[in-house]
Length: 205
Image (cartoon, rainbow, N blue to C red):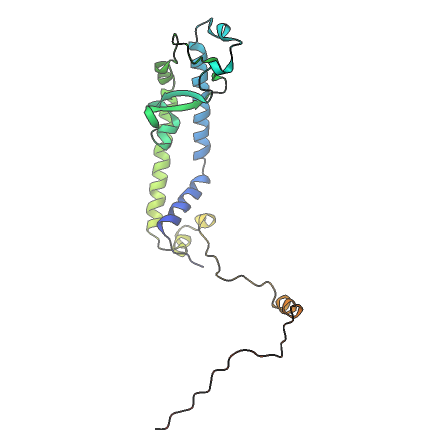
């Protein structure tokens, strides 16, 4: 049964189709590479005696344990998903506890992060172009159709991603089973409680 296409279900179709591509996996690969680069640069940039000096300090002395901020210009999430607050994106970094909160003698090497992440950021920009082009083409195609029947006629490959019309009434698997259940509930097939419409007699001319 054909379903009318709306702005909402067109968007849902596009999202479903994108999930069936490798775009999300490619994004995750770029994010993993980003985390590894940030971790390496962070550890390489620490003063040689820094880790030794901070061993054994209370965890409350350490900085945010969720991640390291990097500039949005080289952030995979910022490039693919939009800008983040204050021009920075937080990169997950499990062992960031070695970065002390109240030691002003050392700061994360933002410029070094930026230079080391340029190649990864360029790949993210290419992925964004590929994804945006696909979204634009899908949108144009779906906008040329007014219902799912037209979509299937032109591109049957999209069938798994199309909305299905839900029946307003439950489907009865077996009428015999239904009658049996009614009789168990005291249903009397000989009783007629329906209203009888009065017969309309022809009017005299």
